[in-house]
Amino acid sequence: MTDEIAAILIASGFSRRFGSENKLLFPFRGKPLAAHTLDLVCRFDKSGAEGSLFSGIYFVASDERVAALAAGLPVTVIHNNAPEKGRRESVRLGVEAAGMPDYYFFFPCDQPMLDAETLWLIMAARQPGKIVEPFFEGSLVCQGSPSLFSAAFRDELLTLGEGEKPGVIKVRHPDAVIKKEIKNSLALVDIDMPEDIEKYS
Image 1: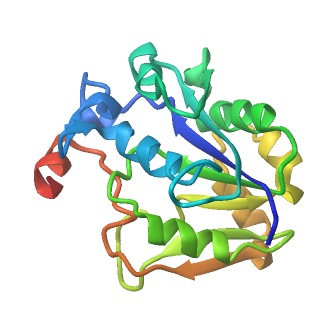
Image 2 (image 1 turned 45 degrees about the horizontal axis):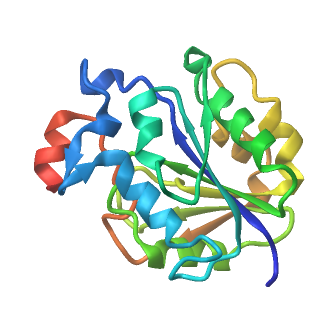
C-alpha cells in the first residue's frame, strides 16, 4: 500500500500516579522513558532503517525537558500549552499539525517495550474507514494502544469533548474497529507507577 501515515506521539500528561516526577523523563533501561518510543518510531521514518510510510512524526509535549528529548531527531515538536485540557488537546494539536494523511497513528510515550514487529502488524492491518488497535490474548495490560485511525475520523479526532480520549470514537463506531492480535506480551505494558520501573527494568 502507498498510504501515508502520520505518527503522533502523545507526551503531555501530568503523570499524577507516578508522583512528583515527570515519568517520561524517568530512566528506564538506560534512557528516559519517552525516549524509547521516540527512538522506535524514528526507525520508521521514510529515511529510517525500517522504511516506513510515515509522512511525518509529531511529538506533542508540554514539558520543555520532554520536548528536548526530540532534539536531533526527524520529528516535529508541538508544544501543548494547555495540558490541563487532557488527551483531547494533544490529539487535536497532533492531527492539525499532521494535515491530511491517510491515517493517524497515535502513540503514548509510556510503553517502552513496544517493538517494531508490533508496529508492522498494526500498520499491515489498516483499511480505509477503519481503526486498528492491538491486543494480546489473555493479557490484562493496556489494550488498544497504540492505535491507528483512518483519516475518515479526522473531524471526530479534532472535536473530542471535555474529558474524552480517542477511545470514545471506537465506542461510537464498534464496527470500524479491527482488533489485531500481536505476538509480544510486553509490547503494550504501560509504565504508570514507580514500581513498574523496577518490575520491568
